[in-house]
Image (tube, rainbow, N blue to C red; front, side, top):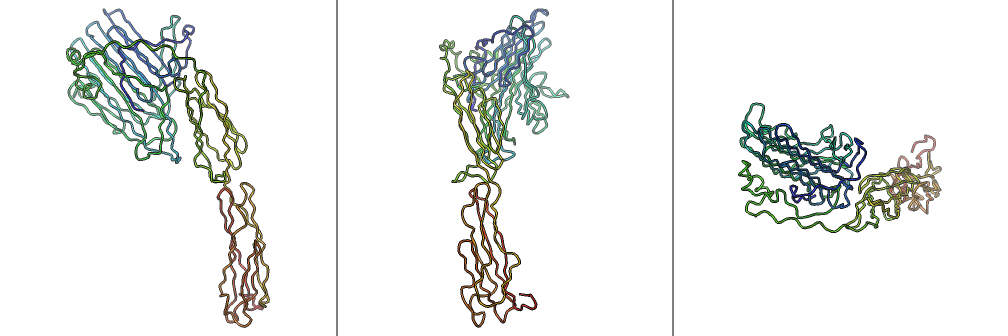
Length: 535
């Protein structure tokens, strides 16, 4: 996911769904953006604005945006993969009986796929963040902060309740701070940036090092690439920006595979699309300076153009999109691949990946079922699913995807054949002894192979070795000493008169169509002396 930047201050509030009954809870998709702003005036009157948007809620599936404005507080967050993920908070004024605050929160998830099936792979988070606040005084507490948290799980399903007028009453955002947390990085400036000892006005902390760095000044500027270990599957990430009373904060991340494992694929979940976005559009460096806010961090990280004039008003919105009547398309990828005759000798992992048509409503869920050696079915939210098959025999995987407009693709099938058991060899001799040593060829084995699953590749491969040479064993020496025809083995009842007896070693090797191989060994002796029974 490569991020561009977004103008939150000028984005209009998104249209809500049909209003639910008063105080009726609604569980929403955790892939969401939240904006909140508050404004207190005259020590008695409070204005609060909250906005929530999630994937699939809007007709425009190319992006999800939340924006809130209360008095001079503005906040927002936006997600439009693969190139937009940003949270912004800006608060103007404050002090005395005037209080302003803003917060933008973005939550999304990624699917990490490793074709090699390793338990852990390398992933990296590249992000840049900046926060700046005015110097606090006797009447004003200026604050700017940001954070990035990555986790393998959610604490609970987020929900929201509305009143009868459609205003948000309670908003429970997705929580990633739990036992699944991988790391958390946060920066703060202003009074909350100070350490317990009161040193410095800003700080940056992370759970990777377990420490915080405090420094003077009222701004934070952070750009870093963090490489970490992650288990293939679902990875959640959340970014947040907060500001109050002359503070501005912005954070912009990129999550991608580390070059040390280039075959790993990180697929971000959310709408697809892009746009010409720029945070703080309409705000100049001089305006921030006049408010006591250092514009330097925002300029150096590319969030703010130091010289450009305010941009023109945004163009009118595009016409409504056409109705989506095209079903999505799902592709299946098996690992490992079957051999040339269609068999595997190890368990197989199938990755299902669905895509919707350009301008479509987006993939809602993937359905699959198993029949044959393995059975079961599941409906997986999102555009991808992973199916593991280990049962021996033939299993037919049936799969299809459904988009957010309700279009269902025609079901597709994939047959997986697994045989992990080697074939069976029969007909080798046991307790084999040839007597008398009269130079006759004696049949000692009729070897065959069977395989109940994939079937044998053909007749077994037979070899015979002897501890005595074929020629030079004495009077009456004949050749050959062993004859193999098909699966029948004949050995000559012959041994050297000056030796201690002959030992024939018979080896049989067989393979099945899946590639399983087995080898078995048997021996036959020609004793030197019948009376002793010794070779």
